[in-house]
Amino acid sequence: MKQPRTFTHIDTWVFDLDNTLYPHHVNLWQQVDLRITEFVCNWLNVTPEDARKIQKDYYQRFGTTMRGMMTLHGVHADDYLAYVHRIDHSPLEPNPELGAAITKLPGRKLILTNGSVDHVDAVLARLGLGDHFDAVFDIIAANFEPKPARQTYEKFLSNHAVDPAHAAMFEDLARNLVVPHDLGMTTVLVVPDGTQEVVREDWELEGRDAAHVDHVTDDLAGFLAGLSGPK
Image 1 (tube, one colour):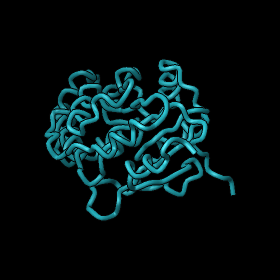
Image 2 (tube, rainbow, N blue to C red):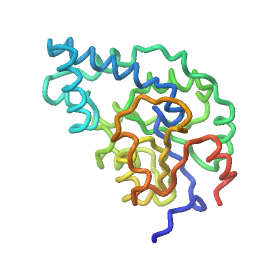
Image 3 (cartoon, helix red, strand yellow):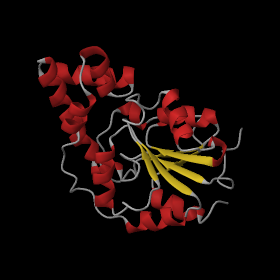
Image 4 (tube, rainbow, N blue to C red):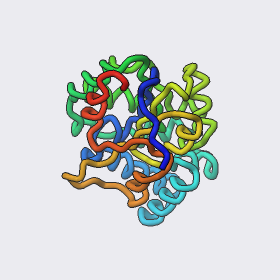
C-alpha cells in the first residue's frame, strides 16, 4: 500500500474555511444553506421545496449553487454573496488553541475558499484568527469558478507562487482534495468529531478512505499541534 505523504517538506499551509477552521457541529453553514434556498426560491419564483432540489442539483453539478445560478439564470455574484452570507456568526467562539498551533507552523498560511473575503473576515474575527493568515483566495479571486475545478487550484497556486510539492491542503470535503493531491500536495481531510450532531449531506461526509486523502483528523488544532514543526 502506498504510504501517505508527510509534512517534512511543507512550507505552505493551505486551509479551507467553512467546516475546516471551525467544528462541523457549529453548523454555521446550515444558516448559509437556508439563505441559499431562500435566494433560489425568490429569484426563480418557485416553491421552497423546488428551490431546495434546484440548489442541491446545482451544488453537485457546478461546485456551488451560485455558479449554477450565474450560468443558467444570469445571477450577479455580488448580489448572491451578499444575501447568502448575511448570517449570525455568534455560534463561533474564539479558538486560541488552534491559533497557537497555526502560529507554530513554519512558512506561509493561506486560505482557499469557495466563500467570499467578507465571509472569511467575519469568521476569522469570531475565531480570533484574523492575523494568522498571509492571504485569502476566495471565490471572487477564482473568477467565480469554485473548487473542485482544476483551474481554480492552478490559479491559486500561480497567484500566490505556491509549489504544490511543498504545500499541504486541509479540507472538509474529500472531493476538493482530488486535484490538490494530483498536483502533489499533501492532503488532510477534516471530519466531524462524532460527539455532536452535524447537518451535512451523506456524500459530504464520505471519502476518508480515498486514495487522494493522505491524512484524516477530527481535531484540527490537535493535529497541527502534533506536527510541532513538520516531521
